[in-house]
Image (cartoon, rainbow, N blue to C red):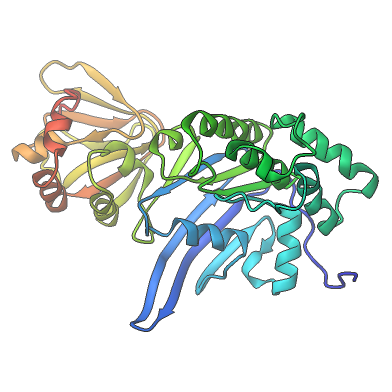
Length: 358
């Protein structure tokens, strides 16, 4: 039956995913449970983003918002010019088939179809690829993931890693600009997981937007950046990078009690003798601090922390700090920082750096 409803065109490779103030509540017998709490996030072409967090942090729910499998209670999910959550269920399903490649943890291959037939199936459903080109395209995709000698085998006849590779080929069937994978390596050995991540890296290099939910921190380090979730909220990436010794709830607390400061080139952040309100986390740009006694300059870039010595020792700053270029820092509230330092290995770990003269 022909689809009569008008759908947005397939996005160009240069379009992005934007999530704005996403809230998701589920009704339970005990009352409403809020799983996502005002999430803001963006994902851009050519990015390979790891979505990371403990079990129950909201990772899979966030993915369901992006794929249109579920709708937010409030907020917007926009991919290209399309507000995905505003589409009807049937339109959303067809839009998803044209624009998204989805890779599941448990492969979801149809057991009675060969790997070749499984890869062709999305093309048959969406109708985007001409019928005469579907088999050759499926064969080429299976070759790209190393399955050229297994195309006529049923899923049960190949290994778990080969099934996941076939699932990736299937996700690429309609040449979607966005690939979203939910724990795609959760059931694979480390060597096969490395291979699967290598495929994702290659796809990102082609300009596709790749989002991978993973619980494996080592694999997450291979992504171009990570979106770290805790209790349904996003931890500021600079906080996570600068203070990796904190637990996720502690990182989220630090995020809540930080405020951004934008600096122009040459603008001062701190001066000798000043009493600091807290500590600074560099988000972007380059800052230079000059010690009052030696006059020796030291430059620090993103994801570094400034001011912990002065603040924890209760003394004024002993260095001048200014932006070398337009920069952004976070000011983390001093009382919160002191409490975090008292209840973690933060003080000892930061003392090892020896680079903060403030």
